[in-house]
Length: 580
Image (cartoon, rainbow, N blue to C red; front, side, top):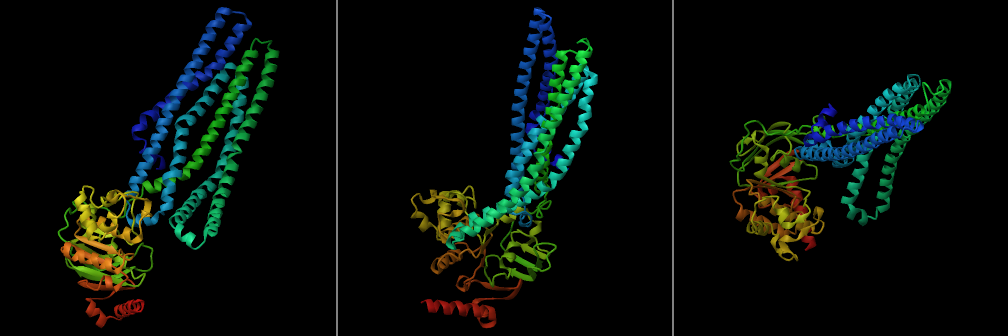
């Protein structure tokens, strides 16, 4: 199953993958003929047959040159095949991840996906390179060496056959002991990468709390954990070389001893010095090929865990798919929740949302308030179908969201997530995530709506200013405004702001809401906020509590009838007066 899945990534490099073993086969045949021809050359020299010396010498040179040529060809073909295979494998993994739903991404941590795209692919690439070249060369070299040894002296050739079970038995024992370590190592790699990723992202927090020593110590422990398992595994695999060398030297000594005796007993008639030299060469070839094969097995053992981890991603099916004959048009921004309940996994005991009934008319502005953990974000995640409802149905534009083409649905629903993300590139490039064909005038317009144009004009390169990865060279409020502008470029039927103005001042927040009312009146606007002021002029305000809707109403209605809203308003209002 794993091999079949990985083989799909060979594709256009299939030709090089086939040529490599063919070139290797020719190379091996030429190499095993060299000791045989060398023995004939020594015989010609001993017999002072000059004509034969030149003729056999010419054949020997031709064999060596041809072996070199085919060795070079196999090396180049192997490099193209293995590097191309790795490129395709990374591409397939990356593209597969892009199809994942939030539920799929929750299953694989981001650090684990990074390890699979880098370390695991490199391991599989090295293994593939060895399989199509060394794993072909070694058995062929062994087989041809044995055949030539039997041609030279059947009695001595049996020594090679006798030592073979010892080598194979030792190799199997070593590999079986090493496999469990490699299975554990890559999970620990994930943990180490997660530690690095977390630390780099939170570098400012680490420095603010002077926790560099703590984080360094945590990383050292994780790194030492990986090192310990790798050391145990490599220590076991390192036994391959001395085992092979021991067998090789023992065989060479036995061949030299019995070969010399045979040469003396037969006075060189049945076995001579040239034959002895050739047999020693064949014994070296035979056992060196076994050593190379042991290296291949060791590499395959290490990469087997990597291959399985890669296939886990490649065979993972997105939990969200567009249906057949999917709807490709969202009529309007009307949203209906019909007895919707939701939990993040089938095994979860508690529902994040419980029996939500809600109707939002197209063009309305809806505010959502609630304590941390009241499932405000979970509610809006169901609208663009980032998750599917566990029970009940979510409707957008009069149709079940599960009947829409996913791309169509999400293109008509702009979501500015709680964790705003900007990518490395210019401001224009970031904005065009909303609409890749957007003109400069359209970008300026949405930035004015999002109250971002003013600070952009103050930058040295204005809209061509380069944004560092993660938007580290702009403030939190500036980042939020750019993300809102990016969302507006999609010209959505529904705009969702998930606590996306928390880092801007109240005046700017009010200007953004005013621009929304005046400039995009037909767009349904859903605003999740912590500040009452951000939603008090909304058409309806939804109060969430423990995954349920506690109340729905206008600012005045909730202030009169809902204790949660009244307490929140009084607390913030009193705090505002004290600050004033």
